[in-house]
Image 1 (cartoon, rainbow, N blue to C red):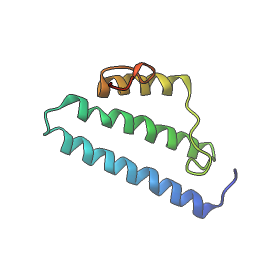
Image 2: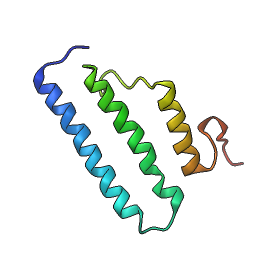
Image 3: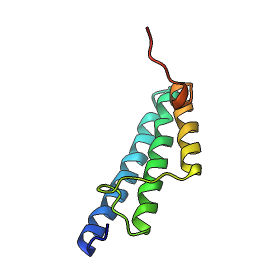
Length: 95
């Protein structure tokens, strides 16, 4: 979906703000002492990278969604496993 320069500026601003939030999260979570919680930063990084890539391709990542590459999926699975101890496709509900 094509969009105008104003929308491009808005989307770019969102990517920058998300990056700033991720940086603050990294600093704040480092004091918690829980590596699983701190690993949420890895999930944020993959998401932000995907948004940035979509934007560079002229795509509106908010309206059109994200289109992960095989590398993105692997990075997400690795990050998910660091956070939850299992890959996303292995997560089961507790009884």
